[in-house]
Length: 117
Image 1 (cartoon, rainbow, N blue to C red):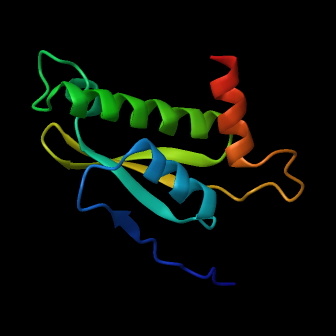
Image 2: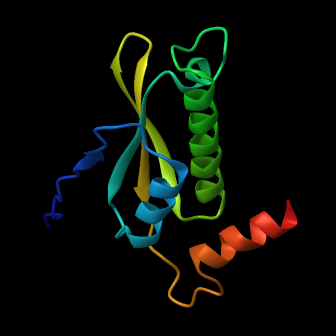
């Protein structure tokens, strides 16, 4: 028996992705869809001493990284890395199947998180 091989295509943004754009992608992504949400070295890119980003860029990247981790904790995505060069990684979110009987939607989860903060 042969398994069907489905090629994976990773969507890469031409500009730095925002937290809102990431959430929009998660909400509409089909299982197996892949989104590169950052390319670089995330831990260094969010650290002021080593980052080439300005304060606002670092702040936005920290929000995005936090939201990516949160969506993984909620079971909405898998987070993976691909090495693209020395000290250079593609950070990729892979959409997971959505629960058939989801108790709440992504927007409801986001609102509940904001109210709790």
